[in-house]
Image (tube, rainbow, N blue to C red):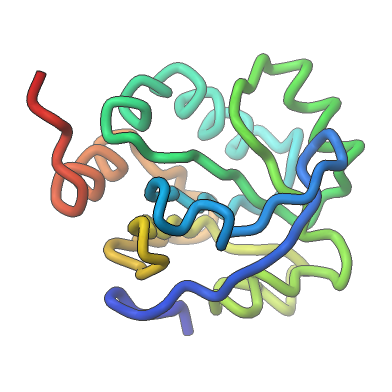
Length: 158
């Protein structure tokens, strides 16, 4: 079962697509995070979803949110995929122990060996403020992200 809103998000330390270690706690007190679990790099639905995020990065930037994609793929696979698709945001490898972070968030699908399509919006204090999961094979929409970000983290007035 996925973690509930208004609970502390489990901290983690994972390599990004360049092998640099990223900790969720590094963002505490600085900025909110959108943690986007996806099943597998290079798959058609995941590519479509992450391309939509790439094309809508301004949505996250206007809310001051750090976008972190996370899957069970290796950092080398994620780097190749990011370069191929032009992803200008961080991808994290929940490779070993296999799917451990997805398990901590309650979104690992044991029978498939990868994470479900789940999104957690985490505030600057490390608290999950919004989350949504789609049915297997069903991509998340940018409207879902917009609604979660607007509800939890209103965009600053210019």
